[in-house]
Image: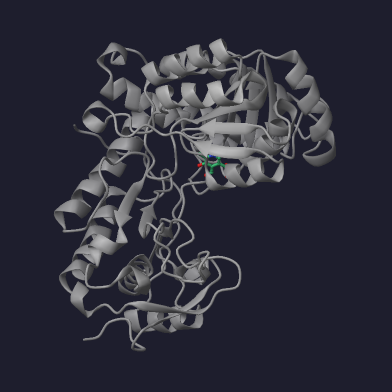
Length: 453
Ligand SMILES: Cc1ncc(COP(=O)(O)O)c(C=O)c1O
């Protein structure tokens, strides 16, 4: 499929250029943990696509015309109109990001002790479920025909689980598309089946729509029934099966912050409006400036455009494909982001020596590339061992929207290729200090040097 960046570039930011020796020193000072490296020392930051996209000329121009009024500003009214027409819901409330909506909504829809079922709850969503006293249970499907929609929820298993807890005991959150574990889309048929089940059991069905637009593109390109529909129309149809939808505008909203709740329930709308006054701010700005609401409105419209989505999804797939050709162990199928199996990329490093961390360090040293490791790889398990068998040793690449070009991807492919060619020389790692999370841990190469050349 032929595609290109559907834009030209008007403002540029120079890329950081350091030598390998300089990067080794920086990494050493950062406790051999790429998460700890300052942004100015990173050339390609692929740790997340959340809030890291580039703005368009229309977004910048709209910000100049923002109305910063507190009550029902012009900027709020534009956002409200846009969200209502994109989602088809009657009520909307803005928030500063996706998790803020979860934090407001979950206690209104649930009581402590209830269960929230999902295909895959994002880690912060799981954390919020925990904070409000909910049991979080993922019931993902085990693959799908052609692996096209591996983000689907397992409807049969869900029915069994719902029978057990009964209508008062549950709610369902479907991540569309999922971010964890490997960014897979959900089919329209799965959404339709799920909606019927939730109506039958009378439990609320909520969409975590952080990647709703990419999901619509996957439906368009993988389900022939939808090939002639625009992504905007597919998304509208997806939304129509849910009771409530929340979206983080930092992803498919193509903005640096923001989020919203959309619902047809006046009761939920009133309750969330009441609560948010104390945490996010009044319901007509929800922690956002007028500028944010202006840019978010445009970002939401740009982010659901078919040509933009083709570039977004196909360039990610192309990057994954050229990494595979270079010998990198990319997890198939490629969805929203590229997920690498660190253990398989560096098979000479046992998992107790953290191959994903070692690969991450090698990528930083060789090319200034930062990714993200997934899961608590370094956390001690119940038996006080670090070699947690549940650790997946996955390295995730998420590409900020409209930031890096196809030639950057070719360059990064060459960095990966160089690493794979000399992978035997890369040392395993040891944990020196672990206080709270993988993000802040201090490590070191086992024999003092990352590359044993
Ligand atoms: C599926 C999913 N849900 C929820 C969130 C939380 O959104 P936010 O970062 O805007 O709070 C994320 C963030 O990446 C996500 O990927």
